[in-house]
Image (cartoon, rainbow, N blue to C red):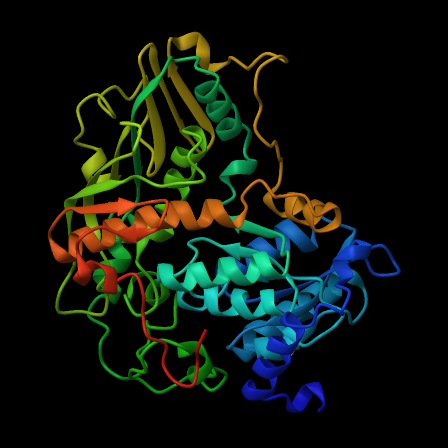
Length: 454
């Protein structure tokens, strides 16, 4: 069957056959390099964020990478981005493609960069893993932990290189903060504060909310949008002018958990990294938050969650509107100027607070300190995209492998469940199960709209 006529059924059948056939030698054995010594990647999702990150991190900055496909449900987006890429290359190398299944069927694609709306992250990544494509997946990982666990199984079975697109592990201030924390420069860590924006944070977000929240009237579909594919595994509902924009994709619960996961992934990832907890998650969660009613957006906002790890370390995970009022966290703007997201580690001998572009500490000399050569470094990277490509070549783990995504996403998901059910939760990180709350357990999974499945 030609690629142009591939169907969902034939794709799933062929993907399953690939996964089950040990006699097929994966291209990764030979470094997954084309004869030109270049890595061929495909972008799935080239909206505002996807187009910007793919362009900056892979097309413009990496001469040994070729972007051979740009896939999106909006024809205009994929056509325009492919044209821009081809103009940069000076040749027709990047093909605009409408269906991600056709992208995964291409034998010349070594890996995919997934920047779709959140509800598509895991389904696309899962089938890409079955097709033996390496994965760069934007944060957050997905909308259901049960989906993420299936992705883990597929990725492990097919030896897939995975990079979580949180970006911050490839920024110098975060690397330095984490190395100082891990090497006990402020002593044993007792508590962590992590915070980020929510949908009505002051300024732009609040203005967008006011403008878009009441957009609930059905509207004509854009001529260049494949709405059936955009909705995919989510419930089918009438189209509105906002639902398929970035704001609908961020704040409608059918498609995302909201900023508690979408922004929360950043400070939570750094908290986990600094605590050396990439293999686990907190065991206890309690707190509160709000869900707006009567409009288009229905994800959690204004949250305040208290967590505890098995070793006794506590963490407070907040939206920035809550963090502004926490005594000692933001009260001295000269010491630690307010940022819309960040992570603060509180130790027995001081504290370290880090956000984008800034590291603040007490004792103050730690603000410029670096660990010694005989101390323990973390994986160091200057670019999330470059680190991914190097790992595709070497088959070594990335700075943000899949387990880091699953374990930090767990915190967002359990926080969301605590707020929606209005009660604390206990978590067994070894078995990855909620303890003693069957109703909460159900919320770790979501049904997929037919005919989609994992």
